[in-house]
Picture 1 (cartoon, rainbow, N blue to C red):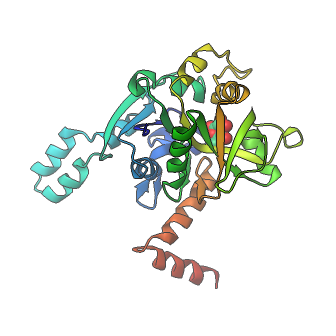
Picture 2 (picture 1 turned 135 degrees about the vertical axis):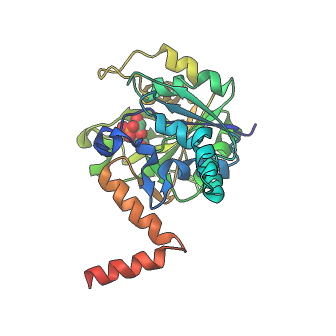
Length: 288
Ligand code: G1P
């Protein structure tokens, strides 16, 4: 069955981006003029997703304002004679149905996904971590097809240099990837030290999870950090042979740190037809 719903966990307070995140949710930091969240929503919609579930936090009202603009603001701008601007301000953030649910305690990624349970209903669903921007929807579509073919959860994977592994979930696999990059995942460990890492293959922030994962999350004990880790639920799936992965070389930008965000702004803006050539010329003149 096609995957209809995607969960986007966006409840973190973005402390790495202070002071900007005192008022701007990290997910709305612009990539030139378009919030990172919009890229991620567009990726999901491009993969055929019909319902987005944003896991927010009451301390981030900007997310709601972005997704559902204030009718009052739009009315006031229209009343001031700027009809065209009012129309642009009133455009809602998504062309598909959107639900907002809340996680108000920092209890980890697994807990955040659990908060989406009622909104998802009893179906398999996608998860897109908005810290990562992908070049297109292809990986998500491959993961959905993989879930369709096997009924198992499927995770997006990537090979990275050994020194990067400790920032991510890292997997053990049975064999080398097949021609489509598909592997059976037999183990998962969250952020291992470089010397303890079981491989150089990390989990990137795209998942298609079976509906039963909510029960697994409910049954998990918190990690030593106090958080409910999605990785622990994935490990349970891996240990019973119900987790596959796709090792991908998709274009990917990790905007989870201010420097990664800045790199993404430059790289993605360079790719834009409207402003890319001007940015390239300016950068070249700057370093000539
Ligand atoms: C989370 C997951 C981790 C995954 C990563 C991908 O970590 O816990 O397994 O590899 O996203 O971005 P976070 O970046 O939230 O610390």
